[in-house]
Amino acid sequence: MSLVIHLGETDSSNNYLKKLLQEQAVEEYTIVSTDFQTAGKGQRGNGWESEPEKNLLFSMLLYPVRVKANEQFIISQIVSLGVAKALGKYTSDISIKWPNDIYWQQKKICGILMENSLSGEEIKESIAGIGININQEDFRSNAPNPVSLKQITGVELDRQAILNEVCNNIELYYNCMLQENNEYIISAYKDLLFRREGFHLFNDNTKDFHARIKDVRPDGILVLETETGTERKFAFKEVKYVLS
Figure 1 (cartoon, rainbow, N blue to C red):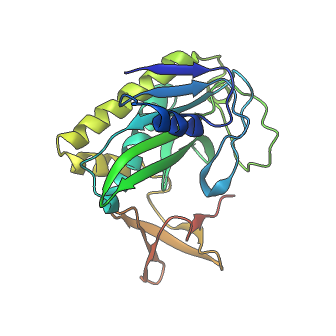
Figure 2: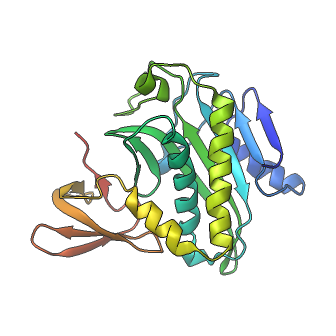
Figure 3: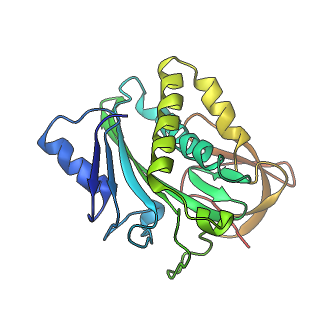
């Protein structure tokens, strides 16, 4: 792991890292972690609730310059696998909800926000913003289904140790990509998909429908098959799981 910049408080670790990149050269694998975010960002423009000094809130910088813009989903897969592998050490039933939320059973334990900067047809830099619920026990926001490791295990956990494990795992999967072993990453990702078996309820922003996951394409497109055998393809934000 490279440089770790720890902040007591910031608006967003992703924002801090982006500003730093504008001001100076920054090493790959640099981590910006914080005890509290005043404006933490999640996917779909949502906020991220976190009590001070309870959870892991950090951003990691990567320079995947060999990755084409239309293949950038592999970076999201690498990051989500790194988190899932680390959390799997502490509990079973960890899965990845497409595209990159990390779930324990039917509850969300981690959110990931990927922000990629492009240079022509390639990725110039990639910032992975990661929020993992570690020791928080009371969630007050309107988030529908949060859970923390402490709620699952019943014990207080070492945030720094988990940060190290997550970052080491991300580096391992990232090195697989550098060694052109993308098939291993893609297979591992599909094996950990949330609701990867059977038919489940989805919503296409118009109505609910039952379908099963047939595939996730290299460009991140989710391929579903309905009960009547119809194949439907969705990009991010075009479909969502219906959770009980």
